[in-house]
Length: 141
Image (cartoon, rainbow, N blue to C red; front, top):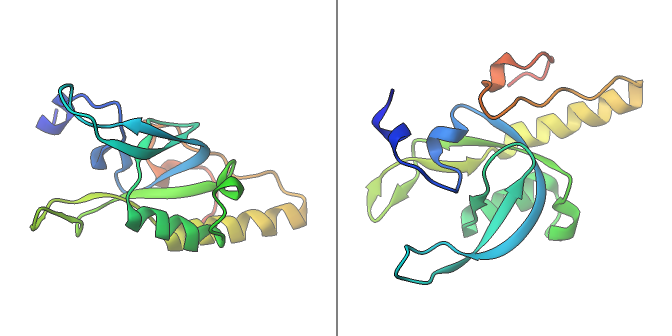
C-alpha cells in the first residue's frame, strides 16, 4: 500500500485519478473545503462515479474547452476524463495534481457522437477502482 492511500479525503486526490478516469458531471456546489478550524468556500464538482473534485481556475478552463461551452448548466450529464498530471505545481513545488484531460475528453465525445450516428451502444464507464485502459471499448486513449 502506498503511504498516500493512508490519507483519507472526501475530495478526489491525484492518486484517485491515476492515468485516466472517465467521469460524468452530476452537479456543482459551493462548499467549505477548509480544515476543521477554518472556512474556505470553493466550488466543487460532483460526479456519478467517484468523489467530488474541488475546482480551480485551470480545471474550469480545461472543462470549458473540452466541452466547448462556458455554460456550466450544459456540463451536467457530460463525461470528462481526469488524470494525475505530474507537472502540476503548488506553493512553488512540483507536486502533481488532478487535471482535466482536454484531448481525451474531446476524443471520447467525438467517438460517442460517431457511435450514436452508427446506432452503436455507448462505451462503458469504468468504476472508480478500474483502470481506464481496462475499459472494453476502442477509444484510443
